Length: 148
Image (cartoon, rainbow, N blue to C red; front, side, top):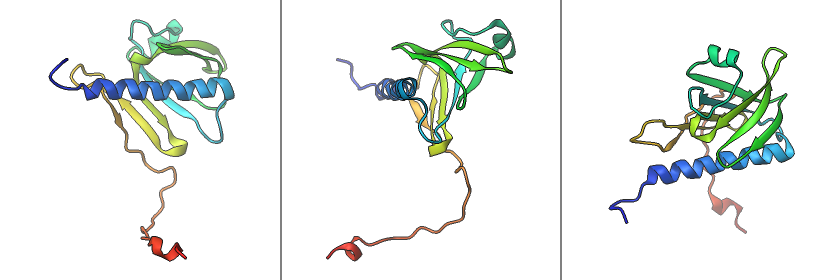
């Protein structure tokens, strides 16, 4: 056994599993409510697949949106394939999980940034701006007020 636990790798695998589970749920049942996703990935990853014209426009990184129209979402242990609409042209994509850079669901202010450096592969929670910025003061509620 190694001298230390590799929390970075463990966290990376756990967050990848969470992302897989979310996509499997969407593939089976569609997007619930107002959920939608912004997913950025490394287009230069050797296993990423997309049309040549898309790769020419996005040689290093690309962000896709899964929201209103998508088809053929299939999730495997290594990645996912999906058909998205680019200027009224449906295009199939294959995105390996190892190519992920960010995953954001702004409807619930949730985001993950997957670190790509060899030294720290752990995903990092992202600080997201609230969808509607509101001024509010925190209120402390004592539980004793609700006890009978």
